[in-house]
Length: 259
Image (cartoon, rainbow, N blue to C red; front, top):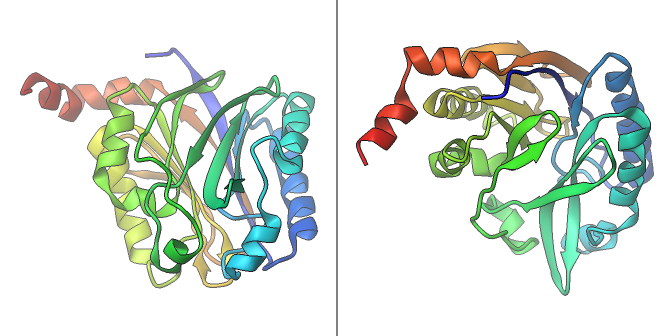
């Protein structure tokens, strides 16, 4: 267990439908504000650049490869601000589209890229699912894992990450108002099940429920954004709490011991 405490930031923003330049400007501005407040790892929500309710053709026009202009821009921004950035984007490879998330180290290095593995509803008609392979990512701010929105509704991906030593599971999302009760249940459950931190990063308006939140390893919500306005959520992630919680709630120890 790393002897470490960090400041994490969730950028809860209004992703205006099919307004990529305006959304990009908003995202960069909010990231810079978070960095100025001391955030060391900063996360944008799912489909922040495009908005969610677009046609397949509109998504295709906004898609890019991993080495594309948006990810390259954030690779330049990360060392400028000295922060780790977690940046979702619409990824294209051959004729397929993916809902992906890049992790960019504060040096500007692209550490990892995760593709959403469980697609919800009409997403199946637009995007391809990523491989159901969940890997820990070692960053200068700790060992993190990525899941995207609907991925969080299944217990197995979070468990795979926890068993690899992940300390913080990050979930960029576009979580709907109708599914708000599940947001309030399942994210704390994933944290408690695995005694890790969970950072859920949501959008607002356009049918999203907001309420980005950081959850402690015992399932308690440490801080939560409003449901009805853009917000920069910043809070300490004290990794000592993982070890302390696991002494009281030894789920993983007992699970592994019984194998």
